[in-house]
Image (tube, rainbow, N blue to C red; front, side):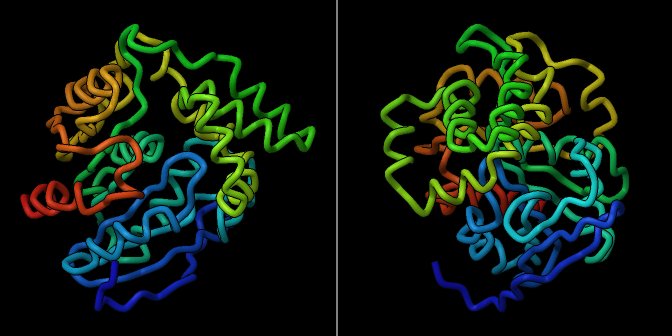
Length: 277
């Protein structure tokens, strides 16, 4: 997808713990930060960034420990929120956030913590499990993934994450392994699967969302779900909207991978919601 917007690649900002956060900057207008899902970096949102940059300033970044972003201290959810704060502060001090999957959870956590900096949040299919539509994500998964990474069994860590957290069929995992460049990119980010499982802790047990998780959010939230996604994802999206005082919308023809694969399907929803501000 071509765009006339100028893209400045590999800009960096220093987070509060000294980590270097790398990002692309494009477009002009109100600022929007794109927050990537698990096993992804800014390359996964470049098509979405190109579309949004026609009427927004778009910050498309590598979350810490991915791509060209570094980690100066042990991971915690708060560190990822601090990274977003540094990016927003470097570009005017306020921004809207778009997050997909676990990136949606991070975007909502940031809105909960960064009062005055986050203006709006679009959360696409935050992986929240609130019913018995699928098995809960095992509580011990983060420990198991961490052990596999420490033993340099990174491919096994990615496979375990895809199976237990994403419910990916064995045939899909095998197909991904055959896509050598993409598989190599994911194994390089295998350690971050631990981060995403821990980021979503308490949201994937099959019960209601804790009233404390996002109780401080006071900005508008749009919770999107793909029409083709499974019933548990629709239930989770409705629960996210209810927990944040937001609005749940189903995107026609979309599925969990739409922000990367067919971003044009969600852009009209984003533009309409962001214009409301």
